[in-house]
Length: 299
Image (cartoon, rainbow, N blue to C red; front, side, top):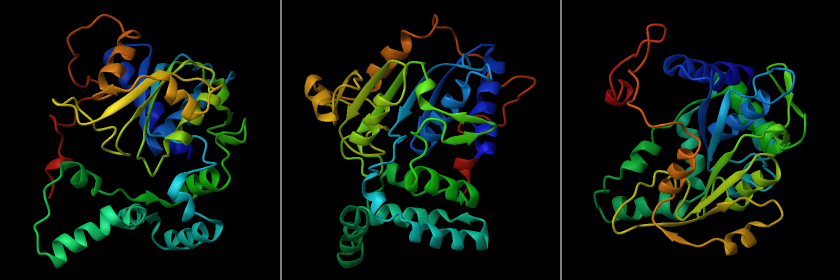
């Protein structure tokens, strides 16, 4: 995990700051990427490394940092299942993306397995083209050491939320050292990162938290652009560690539409004046290709 920290977020921060000539960045992490970002924020705020001002503020999208009640995934993660997976990964060095996808689909068999079996196989209907499902099906392999560390230290031992229990890149990390403002998004129907467990972030960081709860699930709740008429709704307000999730939700006004404008307003208060976007890349870090890149064009 040290490599993921130093060659992932930390390197990205370094490159972004160099290209736009800024001392600080706004950081965003999604799901397991958010767990890594939270770990990075705790690492940056360790008093001995002097890098606490690297990130001005940060955003977590459907992310767990306390895995005490991890939802439906918890029903398939145990010492035996992790050991079985580790034995499999040791033979090839990774967990195959197809295996990961099958695990996620098994958590929602009615909608993600039997729905297609009945309509496509039995009724002979052509499945509709759904951009989110197409994107979601582009599964990623999980490297052996990273996946083992993640499952054991987060899901089985739940050590990320404990002060100085985990050490990354030479420093013990404690989420309570984080003081930068946070915007945290959760989703009502999320079966991968249950929103009431996501809400636990309010009890673990010491910076101000703006918490948003959107309808829909782990993907559609986040990839949720404004549409007319609105498809979804959300609640947003300051996080409060003294309230349980239901109490917090009851105090917020339900708003039609997407949480995106609320996030943009929150970010706007923490940004400078609007300027024309800088040229992509720099002499030190040249752009690899024009948007949308090359990967999406591969078949």
